[in-house]
Image (cartoon, rainbow, N blue to C red; front, side):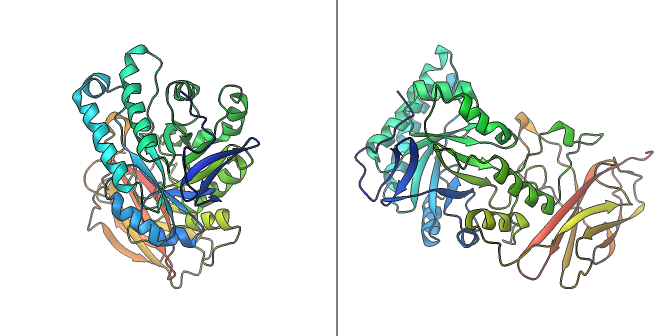
Length: 420
């Protein structure tokens, strides 16, 4: 089997397929070349279209019908995720009747939505491992049963799977032991070596690829922690600079096998904090990162500009200063903007206990509850608050909103000790 399909399988001109033209791979949709300018997420679709994006990616089939309809209404294509348990679940899933039932369930989903005009591609599994050992043969049997079913029942849409970063072991097994149409990468910090990795491994795998997740580095880098292990998050302004720098320096835009990319995360999600990856807030206001993506996708600067936030000081200290407070004392905080004129800006402050719960290496996706009644007074960028009475780690977060639907964020961790 091979993942290097370069010619369509009985696809009509209104279908989606990958074509190899003199070594240049292109995705075709409705008879025209289609380069993915996308985002991982399923909300704020109007803003995605207005920013020049053309594709969204979802990880599962929850509400897939309404998501496809909404995407179509906003002239967007959809890469639909078909969940698969990790290959390590060999004994409690892949070697049990549950696996065959799962294939039948997926077949029902594929046949239900295969004619939807917004559908671009199917993605079987997310960040699966593709092991060498023979004991995983049944995983490949079930995985290929899904892929082959899609090829048979829906030849109008190609099939992919996502892997974490550029891992040769996974790529080798995907090429040799599966029949997908292209490989997709979820890639963050390791995008810095992607061009080199692609070139060095071209002798073995030279098929088409898509980047389904890219963006700022996540809260998993050890040198971004303070003394008690709290992760230091950049301001939204700094993150916007990083999105642009990453794309311009490392995105493999000149690679003949590159089908496009999808930025992460187009929406609001809790991952350590409610703002780390979020390009929007819960009400649809946008960060500067959205405006950066508008520039990347269109070559034109967005018509609006989010507030430019330089940094925050809490009791005169920054996030990396290992801030310790006694319970109950009063503290002053200030957020500094590039433009000192704060007329028309609204400042929203929150204090919450740090989220330390990380089972199986996964951050809790439930936003921590804001601790009320700690704010004593605020005036524009200045805040006075009372330190929580209970010992432990906390975080102070600020949202700075303008009147045009944009906002900026910053946050600072601190620790409460009776005798610091």
